[in-house]
Amino acid sequence: MEFLNSTYLGNTVGAWLAAALTTALTLLLLRLARRLVIRRFTAVAAQTANRLDDLVTLLVAKTKPLILVVLAIYAGSRPLRMPDGVATILERTAMIALLVQIAIWASHAITFVITRAMEPRLKDDAAGATTIRFLGFLGRLSVWVVIFLAVLDNLGYNITTLITGLGIGGVAVALAVQNILGDLFASLSIMLDKPFVIGDFIVVDGLSGTVEHIGLKTTRLRSLSGEQLVFANADLLKSRIHNYKRMRERRVVFSIGVTYDTPPEKLAGIPAMIREVIEARELTRFDRAHFCAFGDSALSFEVVYYVLDPDYNLYMDIQQAINLELVRRFAAEGIEFAFPTRTLHVHQVVPAAAGG
Image (cartoon, rainbow, N blue to C red; front, top):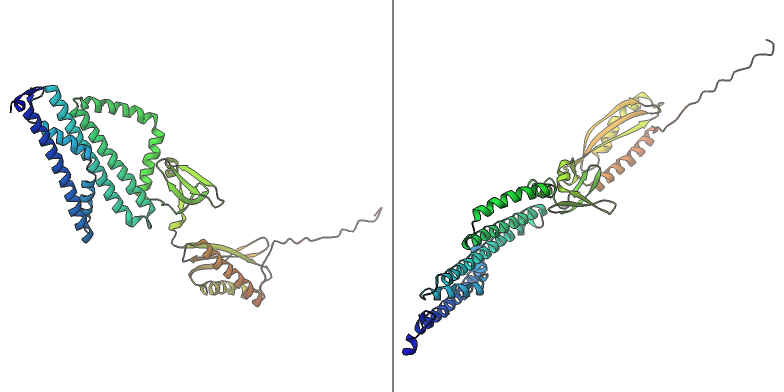
């Protein structure tokens, strides 16, 4: 008993043993509780479709053992009499450990929610998935910034002055990297407004290609000739973008010309003939066909129709079929297609007789 009552570093040996026992029991209870919660909620999650069970299981599993040790040591040291400096260090260490654990929980919770939100979008909406992933990154970054400021405040730093300094420094940095920030915010605008998504075929300032990647600074296209086109996001949004992937139907305008010796009655029947040929094709909608002009070497007809599908290959197949059928019908009616011709009239001049 005398040994237990002996003093060591300001506390009796019995107090030190009680503190060690309290630390061990606290750590044991925390680890046991962690294991029981994981086992219980894992069993429940396997039997239900409720994602809250999965989230609780994930967060408990992400509780760091080292942080539990720090908290257990703090709990065991509470009854001990210690110098103010040591007590303050233990208290601040425990608070920092708790804040870090909260940040870990919040970060994994955001990742969990983001992952579940992305699952139905990965196949159908690649840009939506990119938007959610980017917002998740901003959310996790915000959590760690707040925790970092809370840690500094716990350590005794004046974070008001720090935030003010960061604000002034942030303005200076923003001015220095305004082009990068412009591309970053343009990227966010693309992700939220979705003028195009990955897989769309777009034309920008005469350059065309399929969107392969939408990044924080650049967007990359794969051109028809195979090379990769890279656009800064800010420059991209300032341009006129033609998104052919979102075309619902394709308007087709073409002209044909017939020779000037075509009889008037056959000229009058050409628009109806063209209409009949176009309407005989599937996925087309006839608009108009008119005798529109007297050309240099042809009587010109302008034709407009719609292909009710944006696919370019389908449009070319339909146009080819229409052209072939018009050739057959015109040949059957004795109507000749015109081609550039020029008539040269030669007038012979007889020279006057000598001395006449």
